Length: 114
Length: 116
Image (cartoon, rainbow over all chains, first blue to last red; front, side, top):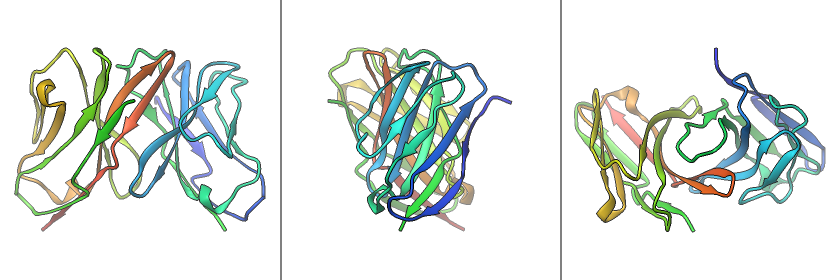
């Protein structure tokens, strides 16, 4: 089954404790990205990756890091989480971007930073 | 810059009523794509439809229909004979192909509540 998986689905942590949210896709997609969803703001892109070892900032990259060492995985790293990073996070993947391709979204990770 | 406006924030209807969700977009691109996603209470994002800027035909899929009007930069979504299971947050999104970044610019979402 074609899918994007994220782990963990739910996470409560404390300020400053490094964490990683994993994202994996089994569709051999080249393009992957991370979004965060906040009430009243919709979804905003954090980082994206066009292929292995190629990543770039989206609209709200501050406080986040990513890596793309393998095509299927695109982890989101919070080196020193802060309460304003409490949010619902989505990973997405698609074929090489032409704008028209459906982006497949993971199930979401709900992060709370105390 | 790309922008998607969903002016309605919350809509409440009684089951079997028709409801239209509005979406207005801004873009300088001549080629672009518009999407609707549904987010049920369980939280996942469900893809509903994609429309490209060259295809202004309205589309109907069961109880769902979409009205794309380039002249008014609108891509509205109508649910006919709404059901309780339609209760969800609905997002309109615009595809922004900036270089190699196929970013989706989302509206803020419309929370639809369908009461029995």
